[in-house]
Amino acid sequence: MFDVPFWLWAVFAATVVVSLAVDLLAHRHAHVIGFKEAAAWSGLWVGLALAFGAVVFLVLGGTAGTEYTTAWLLEKSLSVDNLFVFALIFAYFKVPRAYQHRVLFFGVIGALVFRGVFLAAGVAVVSRFTAVLFVFAAILFYSVYKILKGEEESFDPGRSFAVRLLRKVIPVRDTYAGPKFFVKEAGKLVATPLLAVVAAIEAADLIFAVDSVPAVLAVSDDAFIVYTSNAFAILGLRALYFMLSGLLDRFHYLSKGLAIILGFIGVKLILQATHKLVSPSVPEIPSPVSLAVIVVVLAGSVILSLRRPADAPEGDTGGDSREETLTSPRGERDDQ
Image 1 (cartoon, one colour):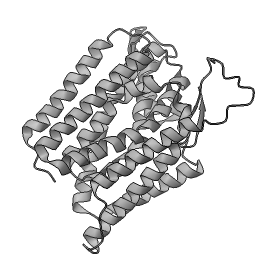
Image 2 (cartoon, one colour; image 1 turned 90 degrees about the vertical axis):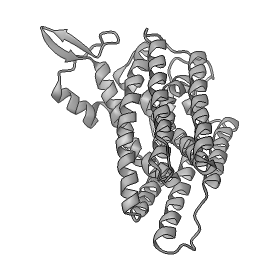
Image 3 (tube, one colour; image 1 turned 60 degrees about the vertical axis):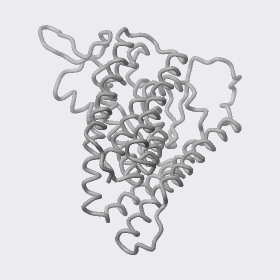
Image 4 (cartoon, one colour; image 1 turned 135 degrees about the horizontal axis):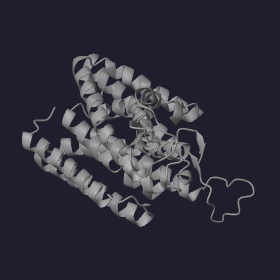
């Protein structure tokens, strides 16, 4: 655990609040976000995350700075799965592109709250019961198995618990009403499909937290490190989605890369638990090594995907097609 001064927590909170406010003001008018705009915002979020990492390095030291960077990059790589699910959800609910940023904005706010709860609980459990690290490692190894076998559970947006619960709480109309989440019909308040989309996004994040929370706790057991790294990874998801929308299927080797990373993190968890519970002579994997492995595997997956494109479907002439097909790195194919 690091001795984090209160003012650093305050700086982090202020940075997140101001960033969200600026983002909301910049996108207060619904419009389709193009590649250039998304790339600029994505660069801004990455720069902000790295700048905060530099502050962590200067204030808390090199170990904290390395753990933060490793955790942020790990969460950033694992969050790529979320992009495929975003595409699936938007296709399922036929969300107009001009309203997609509004949905993701509120989805991010919910994710920040839920991840905070999960991570706080995870840190508390690990600090009291070190043996739970073996359980976390088993979860990651099982995820690796499902990725490699293509047996990851399919996510049905319309049947997710959150969407079904929403429909029980409030009526949901069948048609959109611009960017509104609620409208009045016959004097009664009803939800629009846009609110159901937000619920589906939140449900998807809860599913992915099963992998990401144990993984980040393998990098650090400090609440400040794990939450701030998660927060900055989540903040950049929207821009990354709009930047890579339509290109996700090109990174077909990314699934194998994510499997390698999760497997490596699982081994790291086992070594950590064994070091603490069995024998101090058992070596732990240093954070700089973890960072190097994640960087190399991610870079290798992307480069290999670009150098060895997936076989084009039969009859594909390579022309500009309005019909997009997304391939999930978890082994699923989702036709948009």
